[in-house]
Length: 486
Image (cartoon, rainbow, N blue to C red; front, side):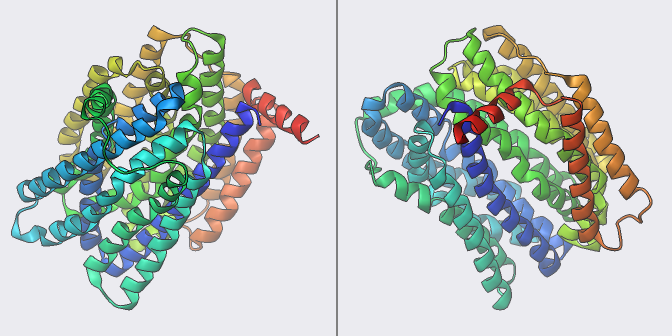
């Protein structure tokens, strides 16, 4: 199997696992919004987001650096995994203590009892992060996607089962929060079991080596921490500056799109070892990054057309009529996601090349801009203000990423952009022709969404092929796959 086919296969597997998590998450959103109501659902989203904000510190870049070191020095893999497990255990303990302190500081008021309970329950998911981190480093270095994808599938199924039990037993807010914690724990089982077949994940090793590994991960950890804060600070600020209803509207829209943010990360995870072994300014590096950008662009255009056009149907299905106000929030967030795809490609490529140090201060600048815009816009615009802040800062992020990548390698260029834009216009026109005559939302949201998205996507595919707008990297990968099958 060549690299293009491996990237495609691993990305499909990983996205498949993430889709299972996303589908279960959407089921959870549909059930929780109706079971808890708008305000209690807002407090649940606040608790889950707050824990996710701190969960990144259980990694702090060590997993990514370990994957890179294993790719470069496979003979030292056991030594690296043992050290990573020890580091992860220490980081997990520290993270739980800091998160508990933050809960008291930000949500200590009497009317925040549900938020505090949700944080305490969902924090249980962080207990598995040490073995999961070591397992992920091993699987990423060896480009093994199946256990990670299986983890997503098990997590999704576990969440749905736990959710059903919570509803059937009428366990209330605590039962719904427990379903989220169970999902996180279940996600770690398949990758950890796969890694244990070949290596020990017992914490230990040489303290000096572990400390050296942690120090080398600090730049990457800073980047991950900034990114985690960046993508979650909006909900935290909404919970402090707005109302639980605002958090609920934003949370419904964000939960719909959350799994899309992982698509470019999965693609770059497969490419990570290849980029780590490729010299800067080489033609191969340019080919790898150009191929990732081209493939993601083909996904982004129809995705944006469908979700922007059918936003009322999406939020009606996700949250019910009480959440119809989230449609405009969803439209703004999908624009932000479209900007995030190419930015993720550039940022992950720089990390794989070991150039993460140049990212820290620019990302701090983007995060500062995001916090400032949220502070200004949440007051007058509520949830839409938080979404608008993310759009502006994602545009700034992709511009920054493109500039920084050009400092260390040749910048890739968009392939056949005008032809692709025409195909996108055809897709958008199809969505408009279906959507504009309807009420907002449609009387039959599920039927409208399924039929409309299928028609718009088909028009885009036909137009892209007729105009020869498909980038050469994608057509080359398809040709290689056909040749292999022959």
